[in-house]
Image (cartoon, rainbow, N blue to C red):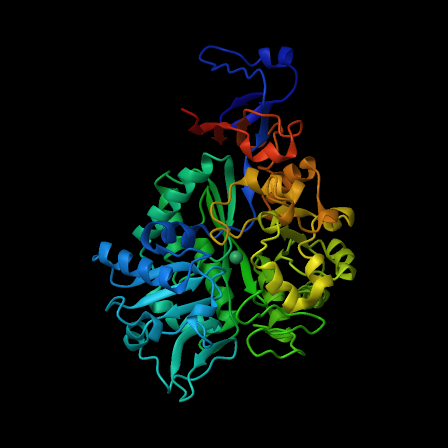
Length: 526
Ligand SMILES: [Zn+2]
């Protein structure tokens, strides 16, 4: 290939390339390995992940209550400069008692407000100082899209789920400067793994425009080397005006758009997750909620049909793609219904709306996705079975639904455009080659006990497609990114191994020799 002015100008045999060699041409030859287009991440929370890595305490997923308390205490002592102690990564465990994580458990750890997110970021465990700072007490009204867990007297006990997490947002903000550091931290780590394109799916994670402003400033300063697209999440709940939030996103897009950054999506979180304490995924058929032990439970929706349809319609009118979080099959079906209704009003258009996570999928909905042109943003990083969590999932949703989770091949077979994501920092680290390997083998190397739903294994060629050109398709930039094609921007990764020819258990071991974005080496192996 030949590259000039940041673009591919020739792709073909060596003789043809010779014509492009002139004075000052840098010639490079690789005898083995493989050159791929720059790799993409279809749903990675870069802003929160980067700041979390730099400015918060990391809790061990498999840790006990004692481990968590010790980690928070140590972190608070080491960081006297922080006004609020933030952290993430816990899973509610039996040693927290029947009420789950409570503020009382955090007594004596530190005098500062403490806000800890669970591993999936669907709940906050906070201390009394945090609630006191924000005036959250018995009189704080319930919210419609989440749960404030309360004690027998009605006092919030320190555990805030789903939409109730919003109440704590004033304590979880980061400054523009902190976000800039966070993005640069992520960029340096992931460029070294061949990633050149990412969607940050909730750029307003902390309820501010600080992360978008940070990307904009880095872009203006020429420091953003990775293509960053962003989604702006809108809500239907107390204190939110869904339609006004979409208008705000359009204004933010104009204010911050640049060569490497654009707010291009509206994000909807339609349901929650599972397994959990409790589960909130929205399912067609009932399941068992481990929290209430209610057996005829369908989960929790955060938007109603009317609002969801209006979001699609208005977003399309303003030129936004809509990116939907749907874990349960009920949430996927409802999304497709809403898209149909919105398109009936606006007419067909190439919006490339996307649904992500897709943990439980009714096979009947897959052809509908193909027909409506909805992109399946799958999470190969989640494809192996975690023996510790599997019994919880089976108890939740039963053997059959548990066994058929997280399809990928079915989407390809039906002609759906499939892209790949990790939900970083839920998965952390989340290197593209690791995701590609998991899509192919659906287990950890050498660990048959972690094999999950092998019928949905895809080929390495399909994983390459999902991680390159389909990622660009999802983000509406396939006209200039996503493949090594004459006229496209010269984004590529040089691998030391041909991953289409090596053992599938070694795809993730392929060394990255270099990463190029727009014709510039942004990473080279030392
Ligand atoms: Zn996410």
